Length: 140
Image: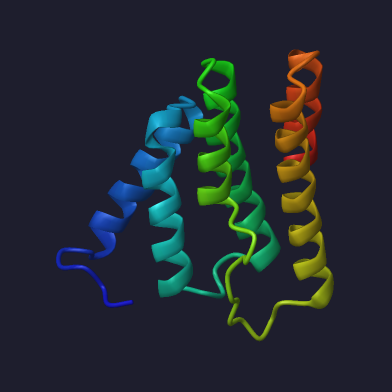
């Protein structure tokens, strides 16, 4: 990925600070921008954060996006579309020599568990509060 124009150290610090404010303020509507920044950062400096930690952070943001749709009472078709968008079944190809099989397994298991729980909620949306709480705990 090429460095965007004007992406010097000051600009990166500014975007990092803005991303931190979005996360601290739980501004879910801006989480996609934070995810985009994290992807850029991972591509620009792959060794900065361990794969599992990076994926855990990204997965938490994506899970919160999906859960927020449920909490807003959006139609289940919209929730499931968001789920498939953020957690595609094919996954993504990872090209990092430092990734262990255990890292890949743990990330994959966490994503599968979260997706299964959301799909179960869509099939039988009962006891929503406790199911959402357990789904969020498992995704972290």
